[in-house]
Length: 526
Image 1 (cartoon, one colour):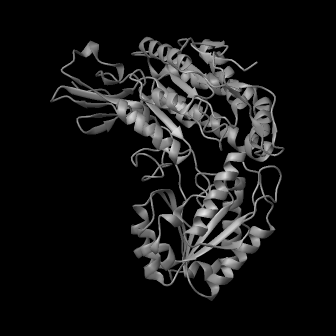
Image 2 (cartoon, one colour):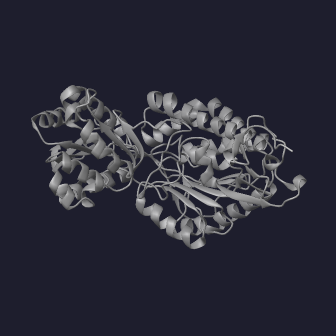
Image 3 (spheres, one colour):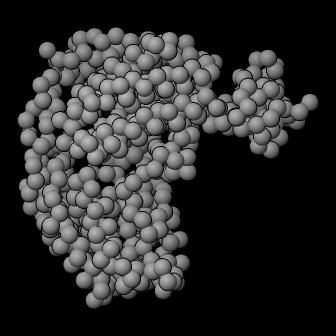
């Protein structure tokens, strides 16, 4: 019998006729428990319930949503061991060093940061023009669907991750669409979200979960007029399919798709600390078997003897490092296809390239290289994403070609430049950085891109195809909340009818508002 789905506050049996099982990627064995593929009737019921919840919550203060988020974080922490054990089985991600020690604390931290933002209210950007009699603020956009990815079963999960937290902080109910790689983990989160919602007196349709739909029903969901917006993290093809459907329905959809995160290592930096850089790059690229959206997939360097020694050092590190386990069989197949596409476009193997080498679904740590002229002749083909433990060295013939390579890049989440601390690379940096700046959401100096801090200053976004919109970030409170909000303007509205944040008296002493062009936490002067 399949596990139940969470619809309108109740765990109910699915009426779907198809089921699936999670698979332990380290053993390649199915995990006990069947999960349903929901038919449209269940998605439709979830939409009806979430639309009703949205109506009930109109005008609610941020305090209501903050209370839920904080209670949910507490409940997650009380169930840490069970969540970690389940996620470890379903993803093969390390239990102590990754899931329990890093990702789960990040998840509860995000929820609590979202609660702080919801309670304080500054995220709403309340703006008051007393002369024109017009006031505006961001408010909830309506029900949000969140599609979680395979590689972060906690921090990006559709019912616990950053998109979920941001959507709730904005005042919206959420329909979570689970990922097939870790349905059991998502189910445990949903159990706690439901109880937290009950304990904080949220509407029954506030948090709902379906594990899987067919592609057509997923497209129908994101374009449905009852939905306010969608957050999606995953493969480019599926994301663009959903975007087309959302666009037809006039619904915003915020996509995180793919990124190769170029790293430019300038000649002076290699001369100054080549061995240190080789070790740091190897660790960054192979962390988590390379299954990060910020994994450095391209390294651009200038030809020379020291560069060859540097590449050889990286190759040695790749060969000697343990081979990790992919999240699923599908990841391994896509990885192999990506490597084949790169080689077809002109890249050659330096090391690795064969399936196996680790436990379960795995592939040797793989390093490739290509000349700068070859890259510039087919930049699209040589930017094929191989999501996993690999990277491509692009060896430019000279410094000018290095800048041309930057100009030819697609949009990425991150881009990094390593340069000599003594200034010998400064002229090249000044030429390269402006070209790279337009191609990436986050520009780094002398630092690998893998880590993504949950900071208000963070941009985990970037130009297409890294995301569907370069203006927004998927990480960082309160800025990520704006994706799931709409700008609401009030013109000549009687004072007592205005939302609390737009009335003359500031309802929260910590809330920043723009009053006649000046940011202040004070009241409107009479």
